[in-house]
Image (cartoon, rainbow, N blue to C red; front, top):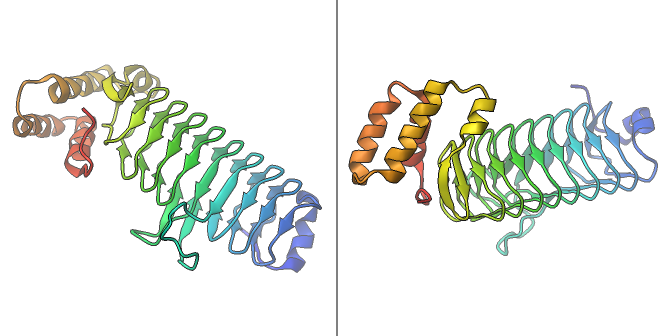
Length: 270
């Protein structure tokens, strides 16, 4: 990727940047980036090849945006975190991968100075209108977050998860791969991979979503058995985990569930 970092070089790509856009001279912008009318790109921002910035977008701070993203009008990207302890001098980042669609009025904040000091968005995600991604959140790939869903700080969303509209996720919660969160849900503990979660509790496995993504009938059966063992069994936790560990030896998806349970810090939503 050829990057440009001087105001002189910006004249070479001016035909793709609207004349009313405000670009800081220190911003690093690839040659074929499109920036719409009245958008603002601040100091320290890097934008990769093929990314399209619509009118009235604001991108601030130490923000790195990859290739072929589309950021729609009125999005706020890389602003300071909503944390009363943030002083403004911390060296923290927002890193966004490739081929993401970030719709109207989305807000994504850069990190506070803990852990890796980064808010990170992976690849091929769809963040619908009015969604909020708080500081130090980590999002994987192929995630869909529907209109007006909100993530507090330090939330982790794994690959292929879907969050329906008006979902609210408590800080430090994790949502597992291929999980689906129902509309207006309140998530206060970790949600297992592959689980359908609605009305603030797990209901079943996301079998239809797994079928669409090519999971075999045998794998879906194993996931369903693991779900029933964890949520429906009369066994105590120790025995449940022993049985899940045994099942995980022959099924990678069950192992994903088992590892998720073992690594949970907020506890699994029951």
